[in-house]
Length: 437
Image 1: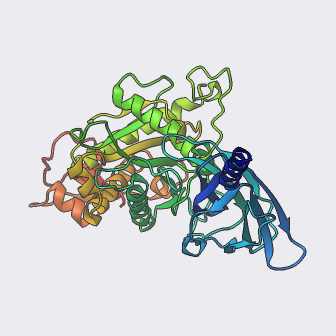
Image 2 (image 1 turned 135 degrees about the vertical axis):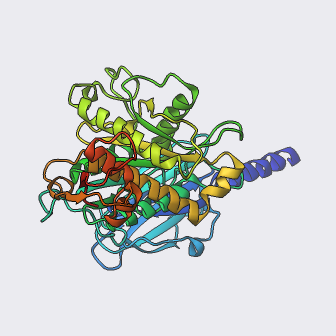
């Protein structure tokens, strides 16, 4: 009899322990302009069901986690989404489950799906809620919407949301640094009467790699520039570099690491990365490898050289020529593009430098000047760069190229290129065309 009692007691212990086999360890809310993502981090694979209550307000999305207990304080969760008024618990359907309620601003058709654990995150349950989630910044106008045709630059701050990018020795997230630089670049461009900027990502949320190029194409951008911070397995490498699209896998270690890192971004961001069987290069579809990309690739390369020429004046360069890699974020056949690595966040000194506002502004200014130099030299048809007339100047005694560049708010390089000059020597009475600023 005693043995029977012991066995029953053991079974009770085992059964009681199994009632909460899983646990919600954290909840994260990532609002983006067009949707909000809610992520439940769990100890084990989620066992769940959900339903909506949309007949009365507040509108509610209810999720039941079976055999799961709540291990985090919902009141301390950061929520800046316009779609979610409140996240709370409610009476569970049984003693072994947890019920989470999201009070919503509208009747929303949510997409709910699990994500398997990877090397950075454990098991997750993801809710994607479509709809305007944050206040929109002023967006770039399309070519058709513009009264005057400005050069439009789409600026992509890499990573975001669940994907932090590389992490520095002091815990600095790449996604935060590059967003600050991207916003600084956008501000500088928008101060130029001949240009306008469009931020692909304006906050801490993830945008799929293919979606980034799609957004640039939608506004018919003249350029897509993707901003990142490099990393390596050791702390020694340092310096900035500029990458352009190649239709082949990179032939050096840094390029392969960058390609692999890009693949990881979509995995961490929870984006489907299924690639067709006919994808020869493992990530870039053959449809991108036609002749329509020739102009975009060559333009991206020439522009990258201009940006490198400016960046080397404010930053140490890891590479002094544009580098090539098969990067999905650069695969638009219509929009010239480049990816800028602002430095090695894995290098302790550069990590500290990238955190300073002064260096962020210097990098942004150098990127802007390089981009502007290219468009001033080769303006797209119909843009203000193309239609603005140059001034004519007759050289007088004591004048130099630097004096004229300052007077007309342009650069020595631009004056020399416009007039085909090979030296800085001027002669009294010489006629020069001065490019407009």
